[in-house]
Amino acid sequence: MTQAVPPLPVVVENPVVKFSSAPQRPHLRHLGKPSLRTSVSGTRRRARGEAPRVLLVVPSYTRVVEPSPERSSFRALGLDTFEVMKRAGTPIGLLRIAANARLAGFDVRIVDSPFAGWEQERGLVDLGAGSSLVRYGLDDSQLRTIIEEFEPDVVGVQCIYTVQWGNARALADLVKDIDTAIVTVTGGAHPSGDWQYAVPDSPFDHVVINEADQTFTALLQALTEEGGDIDAVPGVAYRRADLAVVRTTAKSPYMRILPKRQGLDQRLGMMPLPDFGMLDMHQYEQAYHSSGKRVREHGSWAQIFSTIGCNVGCDFCYIPMVNGPWRALGTDWFDLHLDEITKQGVTEVLIEDDHLLHDPLYAMRVFELLRKHDLPWVEEGGLSLFNLVLLHLGEEFANGMDDAERRNPNFRNVLSAMRSGLTCRDLIRAMADGGCYSVYLAVESANEDSLEQSGKPRLNAFQKATGEIVEMFTEYGIQVTGGFMLGFVNPPERPGGAPYIESLEQIEKTIDYAVTLMRHGMAYANPFIVTPLPGTKMWDFQKDYVVRHYDNGWSHEKATMATERWSAEDIERMRLELLVRANGADKVTEMVRRGTWPVDA
Image (cartoon, rainbow, N blue to C red; front, side):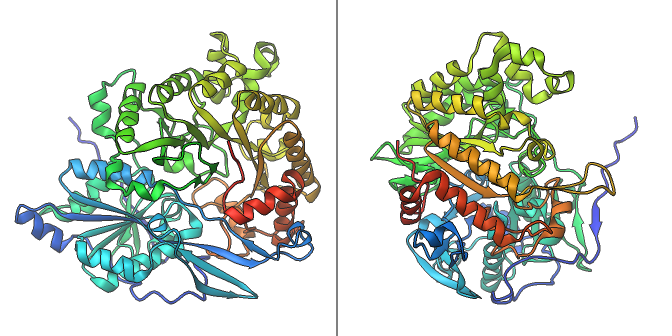
């Protein structure tokens, strides 16, 4: 019998980092050294029969504060300062990898720096021209104390936002200041997509690429067991002795979770229940979460998930790469998950599923469980508008679709649900009955070309149907925040052809779309700017248009790109124009005052 040949590693010689952090930041002191291949202290603990210690940290965050653009809608309202909003939430990614690591015998602690020091804001970096980076969360002295007292063998730092990469790498530098023998690891969307540059651009010894639930634990074992081999861990990148970047396998594995074929115990073995007891849940008792005002005045809120992954494959989105294909965890698993979080004092939740409505009939059972556990909820991951539009237009419309569009695998479950008799109204009513009080509706654009050329179904641009759907949500007491994207820059359809660059006139149509949906009862129009995200299909093409570094771009509230058709400042003014024209002066002023979306149930 022939043995399977292990996949060859990928080696990147002398990668050149193009963007990275603001040049005004302090220089890192621990760059350019080979990655640690073992944890000396962790191996020693294991030899003494002790559990190796792992500290998982969300780094403190920064946001840009700067003068509002000249001739902008903000200036017309007397808002002379523009501030990127605070963005943070319960670290469900760290909770997931912590669950597996604890089952494998590691002593794990989680620190959520932004929330632990939410009210601590201070200037960090002067970017010039009146702009600065403001830091919120624990300061370095507080983080140093936590690290020194816990004495970790391995420190893992989450980086799910490219705009926070500077803070992640600075935290790794602080860890190495405390003890160069501590092994540092990072993971999340940014280092997963930018691994070949994240490795040489930081003091992290290792990057865990894409889904990390099992890979991180395998890496910990390789680092702390005698004879452990990090090259045998799939989906990890590090610096070789000659500083070349090595990725152990070309592809990262994703968990094969199949509720119809796997029992609950088997799925719990792959995806243990996240233990919210590892967090200080008092940190999440605020009256406002990222989607607006809470409905319960007691207990904490938490971000949770009932499914993982997404199959849509939008060119601008990193989710299919990082989180993998759509997988249901099973309603039995989700039932246990809800039971556990209520024991931790959680009284309402934010559903962070990457594609909640991929299978509408499965989603209906999820809604029933949320009602069973009396958990009012917000959908924050972004509802797929195209699925709702297809359900709303019904079989007559579906039968008239051309064969290629009808065969789109993203419509398969929707068409099946439609044949079973499910309507859009039924689905929205079930959401309301299940306790939903607010949704984030991923509208994206009024322009079918912008959508289709980035891999998004054209149905999002069906304005009449979308207006009727917004009215249905409102009728059932569910507030709708509409998400819009401005400034698409898409690759040419053929090599050598002209790229697709959305014009300012097309962006005006999206602004008008937002205004129209507000008239249908939408609670808030939330515009984002198309941003090149490392690892997406757009990345290799769009990065040639980048005009800013990671710190002052990449927030989706700031323009990262400029083209021959418009400047970064043009797009930023258009975003502010949509905010003010759609929402009105009062809502925009309130949004600036409270620092979150002005959506109140």
